[in-house]
Length: 629
Image (cartoon, rainbow, N blue to C red; front, top):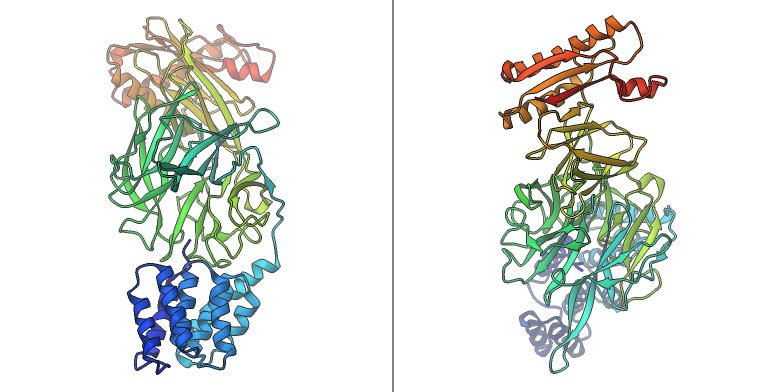
């Protein structure tokens, strides 16, 4: 956990320049120890040499300053403060640069009033710009602390293990929970080392099961961690470090769920992975983007959040392309990491020490607009954020619960544990609705693995893509509560399938018709103007998909059949259904389909598929079908 931020480097430079003309001590032995500390490799050696230097001359200002900087870098802020306060109380040379350093330490220790008071003592004209920036940071942190958000954390005792538990993740349906666990191991002579493994727990109606390690091949003798699930629960992403098959030091891997089993982990490959370090992968709910953290060149800071485009292949494997940093306003010249994109596909939570916060790494929220631009990140507030380091913040599918790791809530300074909180209303993502489906052969009833595509009926753009489970044909999706969506499925050897998704029903059952003469399908996403044969613009994507299907299957000829409800005169309905069938046929011809492969007819209200006594029944009876000839 790094506290040596950019400002510390600036302060070190200032002090180096300040004392470049000579030391405040005349003791040669003290100077010798000081110089030895500069040459030492380990922090413990540096500390020992500097303490010896101070013993030789307890007025050696530079040694105090250097020692406090080392403790700050080790995250032992209280010790850094103690050293600087000793220096100040000793009436030794206490420069404005050192006051800045002490104020910075107070800030990182959560003592914001002291930080403000100390920085206000700085009078050096050359430091006024820096003073102004620091005052802004300190006052912002104090403002957050003085206006806490609702916070009632609950320890997830069943999920937590006797070891450090962190990087929580939960499937969008709330049924499976996974964590990274730091497990102690011992070599053959009894030396302790630590290994990161993936653990999993399941929701059983009113409680979580006891967390257990995932079996091989998910866990290996190496380190696995920083895991996440795709919105449909079909993919699990995680990071493996020091694997001889890695492209870099730590690479992103994924596994595909088939039935109740996970596939052997696969390296996500380039350009998602590089010769550098990658971590914190999370897939967008649309299934076409993966967000991750990397330190590769091309970003703005030490670590940046990047995105990479994803293609889901027919067998479920993934291909990535076009990796790009998110840039501003998400990334800064410091570090941004651990992104979490909610199932609404608009709300991102991430950790940063580059945006205004409370001292360490804080959690921020940003919203994506319709053009794909991210809003200026907002600090989610105190006491979710503290002067320490917060990361690994995830939110459930409903958007009302959040999960994170902490060792501060119950004053357990050595063990990280997972906590659950009710997410404040202003920090919640947009409401979503789950959809659960199954695809099977209409004749044999056998489950089918095929690509699932869900599209926005308003914009005709693809919203979600995944594959159904190979073993049971199931799939799931999380869709924005506000919106109208359609489902499209194409599978070799089967008739094109399309349906408007019913907002009142969570279940989508798809019986694919084998491509045989007489098989038919209703075009649920084809719309006409009222009492007209004019096709609405919202239907253009449906026509495009149908034309592509016909171009892929050149041996298929179809008959287009129009139907109406029984409202109105029968002869009028018959003519309207004929005009609508012909309108679709002409639209397909304009798309390049050979007219000889098409025919059209109207059936009026003579073939209803539902009751003719309700508005819902009338709506279902008004339809256009295609029949394979």
